[in-house]
Image (tube, rainbow, N blue to C red; front, side, top):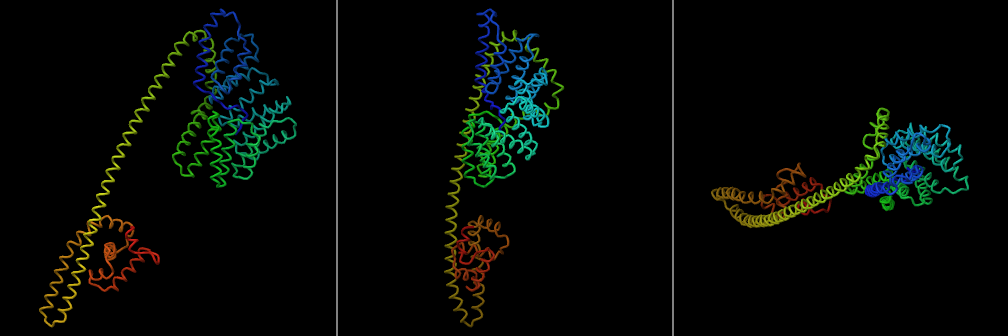
Length: 538
């Protein structure tokens, strides 16, 4: 949601260099001018205000510097200005406890009837602090006071800003109709004015689009978001947010191709902003989109970024901060005042501190480099072991495949031998049957039993070796098959015809065909589907 605040872009490295440069200049400045040249407190406050969003740490340093130079005769307005700078800086750093303390201390220096811009800004800042903390019930009174003061000052820009703020408060309370009422009121005021505030109107349209997307009214949401895009003046954080919600709308409409396009456009501006709220919304939407597309690696990376930003915004212990705010407020103020009085002593330690920081950075960089190298070596070793394991598995699979082919050939040869033997026995049986000798018939019966016993031994051995794994799959997929049906499957798998199976089992060919028909039904084969092909694909 667009709050009309510049996104934070605090770069720790740049801030560190700036502070070092500023600190190192202080002793030389004191020596050159012998501390005769006075420091302009108003200039310090003005410079601190300019750096609030881009370099909040610098703002804190300059504001504390201004406070340390103030005496008891200094104007309350100047002190309030410095406290407001501190409150804004800590707000951009998501350190809400400190922001709230300085904001309350600053506004306590101003009269309630004060109509200055500083008073308006102080009210707004305290409202945003409570809003970011998730305490909208406390944010609303400050935003309402700011709106009333803006109306009294006839400041249209600020009036629209706080109508928008109250709309965001209502959204946070899930009162979407009230939120729409505020946004539509702001839109109406802007449309009736000749002065162009396109960036304000863009924000109003954007927030209305967010409401409709929350209500899953995708058509209305898309209309307002596209209107916002047309009026956008190029702010990276607002573009990230608008494109992100357009992606959400298209995902809701099941147009995943267009959703991907909008996410890619949002990604182009991600590196141009450090505004945590917009970035959190982007990574949350990207995570949801990639999960739907089953790109789980990308979804995981987006989730990591989302969690990190969410923790940064919530500042880890936000509820504890709220509960203990009053208890620690006075201690914090006393601590700050003590630090300000010790500034001259601290200056002498800056150089040593700077050297220590640089050394720590070098050690940290070296440690990270060594750790990364170790991880890369470990990963390379794991990949090598995996490659060797795969090669070993491939060799073993090849050997097993060759052995299976060999055993299948043995089974085919055995089946052929049995088939030939059965033909000879059948001929012999017909000749003996024509004989009337009872003794010959007894000999035939004994011979038949002996042949059956002998043939079971090699056949069982080869079948067991060849079909052990196959039988396991058969039992796993078709547990209702009988032993006789499994035997028929094995014989078909051995490339035996119905006639050969009939001869092998001493039954008629019609009996084998009936068995094949019943087997097809049990296996669930469609008409025209090959039973033999199905068996070989099990």
